[in-house]
Image 1 (cartoon, rainbow, N blue to C red):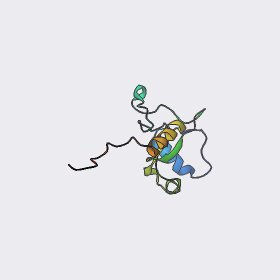
Image 2 (image 1 turned 135 degrees about the vertical axis):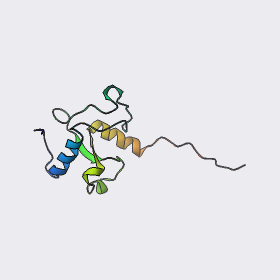
Image 3 (image 1 turned 30 degrees about the vertical axis):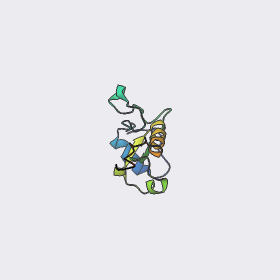
Image 4 (image 1 turned 30 degrees about the horizontal axis):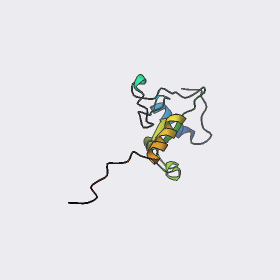
Length: 103
């Protein structure tokens, strides 16, 4: 069990998500970084200078919907990975354009 800072609300939900992730960011590249030096998973852990968050596994989930998600739909994110993943989801790579005209 950790003695690191906990949120003021939804503490049991936060703790359940963190324990399942071993108190480590669960980003596996959604932020745009491959995290290849750390088994393809971000190395950030909760505490000290970095406080992790429990946020939707899908970073594009609107905040209003995110507030009602169960633990199974949440993942542990460090602030850097979460911000980058949300940015990536907001501006996805353009898909290959389908044919405009059939000839």
